[in-house]
Amino acid sequence: MRIVDTDFLVIGSGLGGLMSALHLARRGRVLVVTKKERGETNTSYAQGGIACVMTEEDSFGKHVADTLDAGAGLCDAAVVERIVTAGPERVAELEKLGLQFSLRVGVPWEEYDLGKEGGHSKRRILHAGDITGRAIQDVLVEQAAATPAITLCENHIAIDLITTSWLGLDAENRCVGAYILNRATNEIVAVRARNVVLATGGGGKVYLYTSNPDVATADGVALGWRAGVPIKNMEFIQFHPTCLYHPDAKSFLISEAVRGEGARLVRADGSSFAEKYDPRGPLAPRDIVARAIDSEMKATGAPCAYLDIRHQPESFLRERFPNIFKACERFGINMAHDLIPVVPAAHYFCGGLEAGVDGRTAVPGLYACGEVSCTGLHGANRLASNSLLEALVCSHELSAAIAEDPPPSRSLPAIPDWELGAAVPSDETVVVEHNWNEVRTCMWDYVGIVRTNKRLERARTRIKNLRREIREYYLDYLVTPDILELRNIADVADLIIRSAQLRHESRGLHYTLDYPETAAVAVDTVISDGPGGHV
Image 1: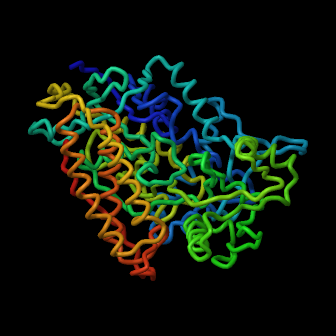
Image 2 (image 1 turned 90 degrees about the vertical axis):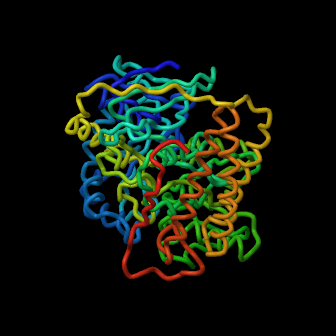
Image 3 (image 1 turned 30 degrees about the horizontal axis):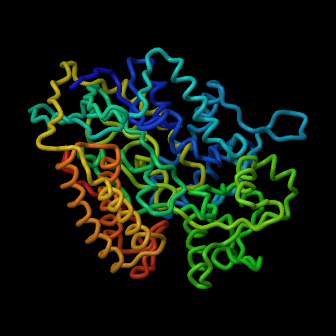
């Protein structure tokens, strides 16, 4: 088995991963491992933008208040203030790297074209057209590729983290690397590093319907939990209210910015309904809007709801939403003349690995950044476009924390070869596909937008059995990317269910018919029984 040594191992190549790598490259060698192409990340699919205070009409206090309101009592106010106030400086840094945000047209001076999204009291969403994530990804990939200290390792997927306790060493437990699978050759490589950063994004693929790309299989949450990092508030899964409903669309998101420009949520007959559920209507926080659509669909038997933005001129829509407009056209929908069919879909994990704003976790040497982490910013419901802001700020804070907390001076420990045992190549890939579909269907049916004790118990029983089957398969056959991703979504599905069962109230994104009221005191749910090694 090959062993690769580096100063810093970053797993994930989205905003959190590549910004962390660029900062850490000033301090040593950085190996960035990404399981597909370097540009195929959750970041790439972010349409809306970065929430940041940029005008005198706005203020940090207002942004903080909007975030706390959306978070339904579970945000850490100090964390919110720290991230919000750091935003403008970090945005300026991103612009220096080459990112160009959209500017207002028709004014005699340069001024940001700030968008407005659900839960925001002011226009504060910096965007690059309607493909902000792709623009960010392209800039960061170019910068990382041009940095000599950074090595981008594509088509490699992490199997498990390596800790000193798992190695059986007497010293304080510490993360010292990871086993990595080469997707092309099936070679397993051990990477040794003094610090490891998990920046793998979210896990929408745990659910049957999601706005996330295929890479979003919650790998980082599963890796961190198996290494012993506590899991925090994992029950809070944000369902984006408006995914395009079309058999060929495959998880195409209709950005919240469309509602920010006046789109109404309507039934098939054109009648508006969102105002019935909240006075803010289509621009209420996402948990409220998603539940409103879900309720309407169940009450009427309709397969979807609709967005109506036909009051806006076609010229404006083509300029403001060029990517969305073209995508809708491909499916026979003209935004200026037709209703846009939409449904909620799993979108964002507000919970994750318990971590500080500086990325520190309970396992020394292991840091988490972006959606894989739970810092206290989002609470029970993420405010729109705060996610890219969090990754931008926390990647900077993370590099500073690593500089302040150098690892022990002793050399990195020996890493044992990966044990194949009696494992053989699989001739039963149909089992993986079947279990993959069953995990996701179970989560969608029983652990979705509206929950009950009975549904959660059914899900827990079925996922427990599936995890046992998956473990047997994992041990009997040689590892493949498919079985690794299946193991991860099953592990995280179990964590979501267990977290939901711990919360005996409805708060934010967790709504249960058995406990419809919100408790007077907000308490985090924490699961800290990770095995601390491979399972």
